[in-house]
Image (cartoon, rainbow, N blue to C red; front, top):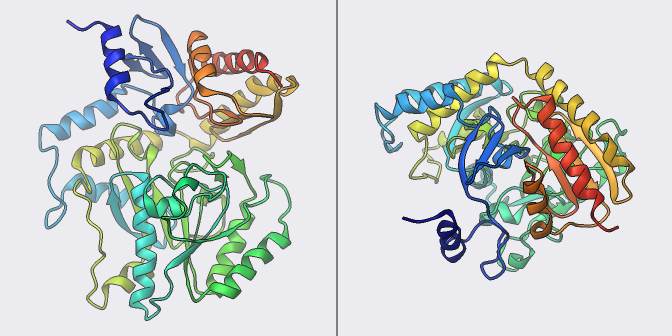
Length: 428
């Protein structure tokens, strides 16, 4: 019979974890259970989860409604191919997504993950312009400091210099990059920034299929918050130069910014919208790419078919989980719940501002960020957080919280106290 130590040794020998070296791996901790906002490790240690398992488990772990939805669907069928067949969970989910997103978004394409939903969006844009007699529109404009996933087309629109993918730059399609939006939700719009986008469009619009951006928050590229008015003005520029606007809401969707979608902080609608992560409450892998009739029928009316078809597209178990997750979200007062969560994090993280190691503390909706003056080493700080009874996974200079929406004020305080203690021990 294998011991926990045996399992961890096998893990180290066999498994290649994300963003991890096989020869010098980060420490990994064996999980025995998870309920609510707590993860239980082998041996019984309980960690308060500040990550929502990469921002997806918004209702907490082991939720009875989520469990029941999957169990009920499992008694009917776990999967059928989506080519030539359909099923009620997918139809009901598409109906709900169309109802909660801006009105022009009426067509839904399901895929396996957020990164693939971005691939789908980029392919939609290119194929749309091809059917419109503009086959040269094959490229995209995107701000630096962006992150859209780890697959090849998605990597091509991630930050080319400071992102995770510069190793592959020679193999990637060379896209057009502009500066990231100036930070500050309430900072007045910088017209010079918009002019720089106009200049890029003016010189290259015959080649540009779309402009892709994470609305309101650039997440993995630095947890950068910016004024949503930039998005309203970028919409105007896209319309002027015949460029499709793509919003990547994989991280920001389903309440994380205090509204159902970050798009709801604007007065406009993108042509294509990508969602994932919290779509299923973190239970199953599923994403969706929504678009308007202009794009969907533009591709289809001349007899064209969209050239993408994931094997597990519209998986019934995942769709059932997503339907249950959206029903739970409907039971919340999202603005009230997330405003409360933001207030708790602001108050709990405020003492970190006094630390010499800290550059800035900022919060928006269900996102709390402590930005340091220099990067931390994950191998060093992760065990410290575990020892203090919390699950917080920093990257670079950022120690941040994206907790489940059901977290308590006391649990937020536990997370913040641990961050304060670990940061205070870092050298400047």
